[in-house]
Amino acid sequence: MGASPEIEDTLSKRAIATFILLGIFVQWIGLLIISISFTLASVGRILGFTGLLFAFAVAVAGALGSKRTTDHQNLGLLILAAALILSAVWIM
Image (tube, rainbow, N blue to C red; front, side, top):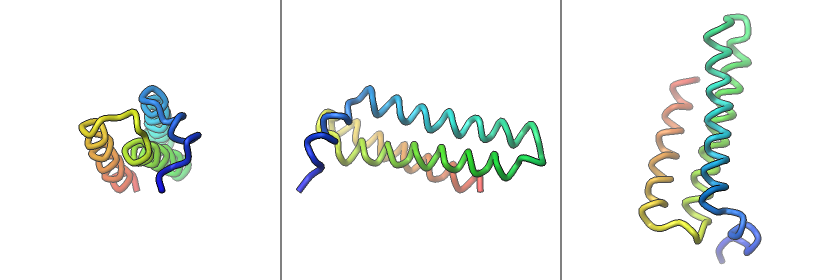
């Protein structure tokens, strides 16, 4: 009862890395907004939290749903997911 074949095919190592980097980039933009303007701090926090949550979801999906990753890569993705959640708590 794993993931559907279409999802497993799209979860390549390159796609996982690209989407994680996209989420971290959105988080970085949120932190940049926080540091530039205090009036837009709430927007920056929401943007940063959303980016980290997206990267977290991709890391967990890649660790649990991809057949193309090895056990060590799955462990690394889960550790990355834990670090992303800790970062999200720090932003809030």
